[in-house]
View 1 (cartoon, rainbow, N blue to C red):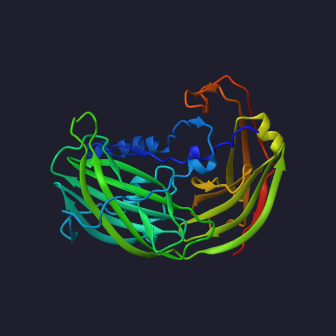
View 2 (spheres, rainbow, N blue to C red):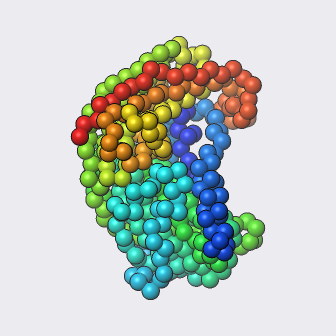
View 3 (cartoon, one colour):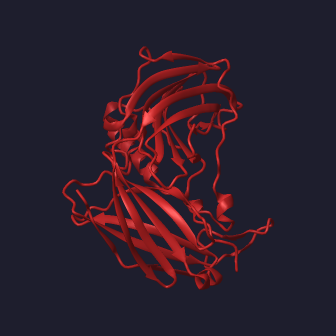
Length: 360
């Protein structure tokens, strides 16, 4: 049998930055629309084949809790209201601010002040927004390093994504999303987020700024209602099973499994299963993939987070979309790959809709 497919390449494990330039009031709306377009633009998929177990990155922060940084409440620092809206180009975060908790805590080190603004925990993922003010220019697209951790919990954070936008001269706003590796919702958590370094844009020519911007806080998960579903659709060796839906005040989470036949695994190098979700009113819901984990070579467990459910909807229609691909070649390290725009064999098909009656 060939090595197991990799779906977790869809998880954005890196750092994504977008910029917002200072403009006149007359141009501000146009700039915001351009910015939203950039946020919506998907990154190309990098197809590489490897063991699923190896594709899960366990983040452990090596930074000490003690250092040269200091903590202060940030009432004197002007905060941008509702930072979630700045990252809401596709509508996913439209209801997050009203359900978030305001921390307003600042840490300063190496001439850089980081203020933790709003945080929210939905039981599967932690969302944080913050502002950064620097004494020196960090360029148009700086990056930061650091992985949040959940303390005193059997769960762990296994993927982290940072997004930074420039908001003014030497000023930036950011959002970090950290996903937990757990099948069940987590009711509460003690979190630690240490920003270990800030990397200026390469155009600035400044070296990485190492410091200690550490934040500790405890959060309860937002209220949620869990609905067991256990409905499936299968075709051509692919079986998708929707296990449950979890409804929160600002989103809903869909847990689903994907099972592949041995024959399919033998024939194709890469298998990708996406889902499209709409309701009986015709609304198509924006979503982000929270990642997945595998306990066998032919099964993968997924969770996706969707924007807030329309309260008038009575049904969710889940359409699994399957993509089968052949590799282009083998890399020097022995892993196979498929290039973007490849002409290698490919098939794409949809499974039958899975219709979920929404429990209210």
